Image 1 (cartoon, rainbow, N blue to C red):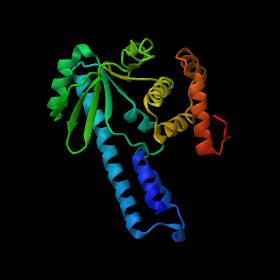
Image 2 (cartoon, one colour):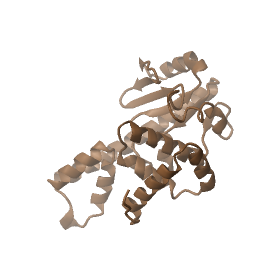
Image 3 (cartoon, rainbow, N blue to C red):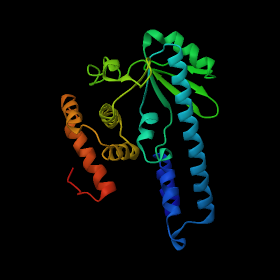
Image 4 (cartoon, rainbow, N blue to C red):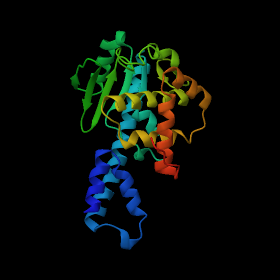
Length: 247
């Protein structure tokens, strides 16, 4: 049925909760079967629990890093989630955390002390898992050395700054978050494609007050400003009744 096809597509993009909220607002005669409604209610409950647990895990890790003098920077989903009106609308698979490679051993020891026993070392990042569904991708670099954007991000600790009242726990300004989201999207786009969730992120950031001139300057420097405008136009077309364009 159309509902099953819609849910299959939404699940592939991590957007089932949007379908659930859409169904809640439909008049009774247009709603799907009780079985589908029950499943979608479960989706919302599950995502609310998962989201809360993931954000609690980020706070717990950052507190431990701060106490033990380990430089850390949360990036991607766990940061972007907080820019949404409702954090459960932005699902994420892994928690992405950057640390300084020279602190690898103390970082690993800390993670294991917090119950992240399942550890896998990778070329670009390490993976830590803790049941039932917390997975952390620990990055030694924000982008790989082969990336077109490696030079710009070589010293991310100069772009980011410590969070208020903290010394080792860093955050990016909202402008730099958006720039990195566009960089991350561009790399996905070039390497094999990008999902709908990326475009929703761009739409969400388009409603946040920030220094747009700075964003455009940096993206121009990175050769991504035209790409950014195309993606913004797409987001506007999909979500705000904007103009369709040939591209």
